[in-house]
Length: 232
Image (cartoon, rainbow, N blue to C red; front, side, top):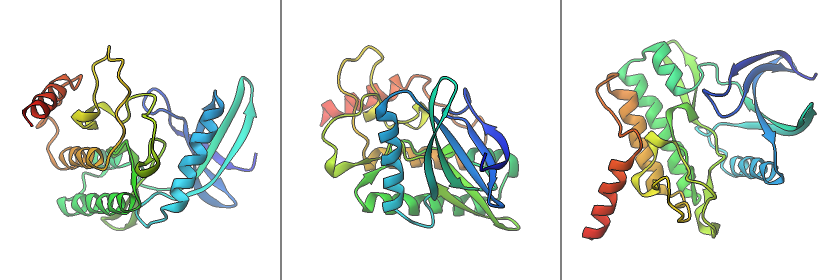
């Protein structure tokens, strides 16, 4: 009830969560909706906000607030973010067909965000084009900000392995992949895996559509990684 012009921007199955654009106190913002099914869901969100508050940087998406609400069927949480008017980087590339210079500038922004994140001992865990938000700065000029820190981990204090394999298949480093029937603990996110995912972002942002392909299940990469490890 505090928000005006609430409009659905994206949601399942295209995205994990429902995302809305809205106005609060006359200013545009974005609301990301989370269904709270377990107590750890709220703790995970609090961790994401804590990470973002510790890592303030011009190229890291800004969270303005986090709050709980109730609705029929259970509890939900909303994360209010600054409004990035050009959407995510994947949509931006398709919509704007930006120049090579603009693409390089956006990728440089993401590299700066990762350097800051890694410099503070964190790994993102899910670097990909849809997790980069774009803001117009003038005619043909945009800034990119890294977002979605749900899977981020403080590497120094991380003792237990994640409960599930992190990251998105096409962007996932081979050392983070596991066979579907594996009972081994899920690998932990690393700086190196973030940089692998960043490399995939560079490929997708700069190569023509159809000029690259990925192993659908990642099995081929995983076999290459095992072979390389055994050779060492």
